[in-house]
Length: 597
Image (cartoon, rainbow, N blue to C red; front, side):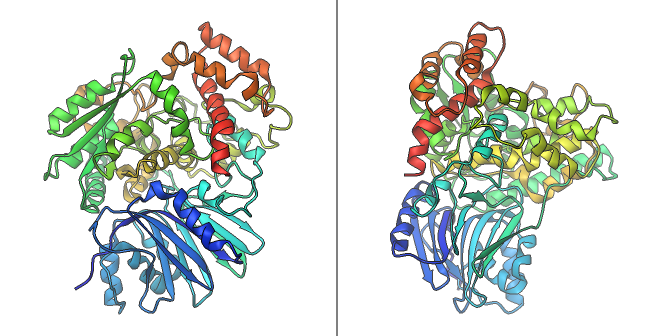
């Protein structure tokens, strides 16, 4: 009888190639720096090719098993961060082909799949993953990341040596990795509110991009793309049929993610369409009462009514509901802890840090609605794209989309000093993605670009890091490959039309949810910073932009003072600009020293 080995590994790390005396100590330190991702255990493996390690979070059969996993003769070793939802079917095919298994888990399945299919195995995987594989026969290391980049993988390559890890802080456990900042990448941050991959904030560290794999052989790394989102919108399908198809796909995606867990399951429930639909589909599977969690604010903020709608959904489906409340003082006291989980400057949403802490205290796995906005259209840019004329200049879409972020390239020229300003315009970077778009349909083109940029580099970054900071694994049914590819095959008018967003998804939601939830305006799972920056957080902002904090010389003082003054006097709403600058200040002064220590 096979011994179940299915503890989810949530942090991987290792060294390949040239070795040094301190490698064993380095590996221990890397594991310690990733302990929050997997507090239930660790594992190591060493061979002439290199060293690999992992941190483990027990989710399935919590009392058994360990990684790294191997094939029959041990020539292949593997560590996996994430979950493969179709591993049982894949394992059955491999067993029929003659492969012998010693465990019932997904990690060993990948090792045998590599034996059978080589690097093509990535096309056969359904799930969220980042893995490292050592092939001693070929003397090479093989790395891969899932299609949307739900699980991270960073690396530093230098002088015949490659160091890799799930988070940047672990990379810097190796003292040989350069600590220099990448000012080109940081310049992009002030537009996007995140660092665009494959860059990081550091010159010597890169990120393996979503939908790619890499081979390290003979002291060289080669990266290959195996998948990217496509929004060709070429399906010939009626709206009623599309609803039926989408319901079936979402049911399957939710079911696959719930079956891959032997521990209680939670749902992030904001009370919006996306998370409420996931909760409905999860609840209909029956079993133990589903645990749902929502985030509220004290005192109540007039335009943030998420908790009210979340309560209605929880009551409708009989969930065990929990509410978490935070205030502006919570942000003032703990924003450094939240931003520290990200390793790089990050001006995106961090509200899930506090919700994940509460969720992680009760369950180890939670479902969320991430990805629905980018697949079905919700943001201001998506609404505006539906209004663009069909013959609008394709070559200007990058500049147009960049206006919906924080600082435009023109604004950065006034804000940033000469040493801090990059040579590459952020609008130009976006335009390279628009030039590769699968369709001239304006809505679909914007969604495709967002799925290649905003989704992996911002949305999925906070989904992973802020939850893993509390040893919580979050799964995204909307980002199932079948769901996303179906969404991409639909015309833009099924998603956004003037006056309505998520058109098809809302039609589907009406089969499960009350009209008040389906038709409510989008609030977004973001902090009410627009309210707090004008009052409660003013002292915090003053400290962050004080002369002692501004000595780094990245930006000029006058533009920052103007932004603060105009916002305080309600001349203009500069919420996102100010928060983007503030997050950078906190990162540079307080987080950066911890990352590169």
